[in-house]
Image (cartoon, rainbow, N blue to C red; front, side, top):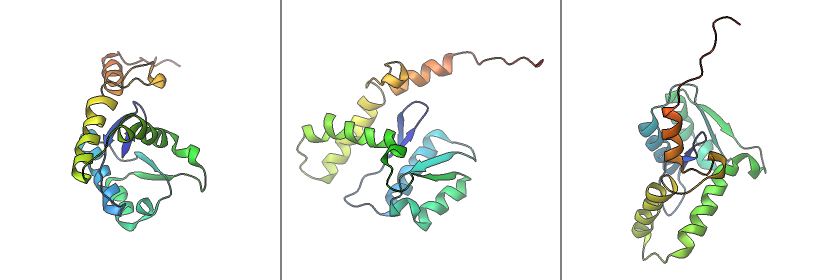
Length: 149
């Protein structure tokens, strides 16, 4: 899962029964396709072997992204992602009984797109959902900086 920290919007995700490097590469690929970020983007993750893998590191380098990993044993560095997964479990996964992995993938994607990004309120965003926050911020006029400083 890839979250845009500006708006807390989930912009990339992938699901599988296990955690190979390809999984995080697929989530990053979705995020890049959706957002088209430029070089220099800081991509933060925990210290999992998938994120340290040569495959994932090469994907970051190919886009000119900067890798940032949590400090060893410090879950607070990745608090936004940890909170997303707690919300996902409490608000969706633990409320359902999935027949199989395919059913879970469809339902979780529906939660991300149909609820988390578009309806779920976030106190850090002034109690707005991520999609609404992004629209509101895009509609604001930029701050003009005087050329005389």
